[in-house]
Length: 287
Image (cartoon, rainbow, N blue to C red; front, side):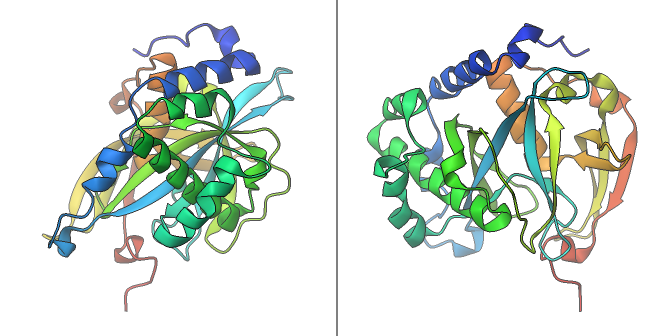
């Protein structure tokens, strides 16, 4: 059984909840520096893992059907033109070592610094190299969010870094950072994004929408069957989206740090089957 949401009033108090997020994310030691240095073993390029910065966008919607404000996670649904088509993901992408390092000072010292306030103070308490890596991957994530959905970096308030996460089907390690979006403005998804999907934070405290995502995936030794926890989100138009994999893991990790969240018994929920095609990993139909 999943524990009930702690102090339900906290989730409707925007100021108090954001202060809690900044404190909880800022206190642990950030693993960005250590993880990044392990990504490229010397002389073993065949085992090279690429680094990607992603943004976990948290919004507060003032008006909801029930008449109360609530926090939501703003995710993107990947289009059929890119790897992992149809998956819900966080805005972000591969680190550009040169460009992102050139843009990094704007976040720290620019006229409207995103890396500021108490969240910056916590980041500065890390070792100096760790602070630079936090700023680097925040730059990376915000640049990619601008390219993918035209989310302006000036509208994002940095909340803190999250633990890194290594993908199993890809040679890629994700460096996630949480940010609060006061007002996203008009977003314009590019060709890589089918649409934007918002999932309420409180959805993760509903046991009835968790299930088992069973995939038949291609692998080096042939196809294999894998099972993952998932959240089944139903849109207002009656459509259904399945949140699983890295994005699911990162959000659950975020809630665990901030609220001591525990995942419900997802294996008791409905089972959703999906057979991944060969182009799932490449984004290109097999020839």
